[in-house]
Amino acid sequence: MAQKGMLLVYTGNGKGKTTASLGVTLRAIGRGMNVKYFQFIKSPERTYGEQIALRKLGVETVQLGIGFTWTKTPEEHREALRNAWQIVKEELKNPSTDLLVLDELNNALAISRFPIEDVLPLAEVLEAIQNRPEKMHLVVTGRSAHPTLLEMADLVSSVEATKHYYEEQDVTAMKGLEF
Image 1 (spheres, rainbow, N blue to C red):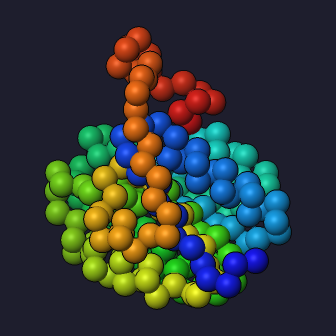
Image 2: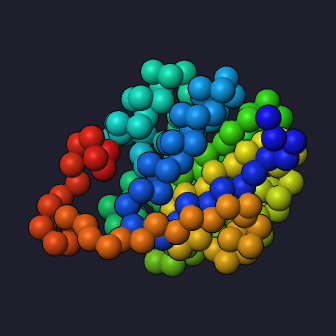
């Protein structure tokens, strides 16, 4: 086992960031690690394929959001982000968590349609990440990763779209592929 927890960031505009985090999650589960998987944007009112699979594997999987920013009011999103950050902030102190995945945190931090700094303060997020338990591995996903987070990271993978059926074939999200 590593002596130091790694910070892995998966970002970019292509499809596969959450999928990459799930691959790391599967490896960690296979090695008997205590894994927790938190999703910042996805809502607990819906079910997702990764949620179903991870729960079958005994992984605590929590949807902290209320869906995409254009489907709810700014105040609803702000409240969800406030609550999400309180939960995640505590988990970032938990020395028994070997791998923590913060899926779509980058997306949440990059919201510009309404103010979020007071409910999801960037400086506080970065400080909590920096001060997490020494051996905790952390995976952060989502588009538009903040430059400071990229500098802090031990690994950054940028997933870029070369071709995608959403745009090219006017295909909507498909069960089993997107959710």
